Image (cartoon, rainbow, N blue to C red; front, side):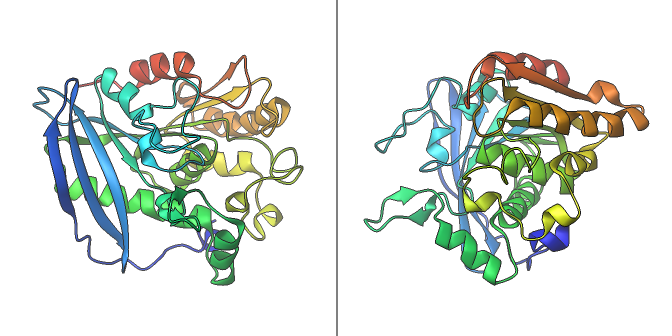
Length: 298
């Protein structure tokens, strides 16, 4: 799987820097950036509860295709940013008592600009250029999540409980969450929503962004097979019963494969699928009560 994704990339100096820190009405906000690859910087925003005195479980928030991490912060800056309720993952995490980090994913937000210089989301040409270099957009995003965890463990030890790192995302962010959790054992719990499905019924059956494609992967894996790599760690898969681009039957089939791996390891209580009544959208009323129950603040 690592080879197909084009991993590992070349590690470099973190060059971690806090660029702004301020207290807000409901949380403390820390802006920082770090170097994921030589010359490639990732802007991040951390939110932590007011009065935080000990390391807390921390949620890495991966928004779907969008103009940037501000969507996970509940901030609407550009035309089209308006999203269904529940997309403000970082705000909801802080409300639940956790720290949260929103990052601009590779080829989204400030890392990808349109012809007018405005932040955007991935273009087909960008992902295909990565493939020409033996890389993949998904692999690069997984690497960036891994490098973010490196940084949190190194520079944020007074804030982040490194044994309780949650990765949560929807749609394209859910895809990145799923692959990252398969390859990164430091992720304690993964919460991909509106992202897990069989390749045959989703990515290979209809038009999808090129960042979902990994050359040659179907010769070896279905998406359910990849999910088995997350076992026995905690996994919550959420899908909508009317999602047109990740059909529910394909999602159920993937879950059945993953569930068998958890059962063989005697950890079936760590894996569950929840189905929301709706389309391709957030399901906060399903997700956050389960996360709060599974990831206790100690």
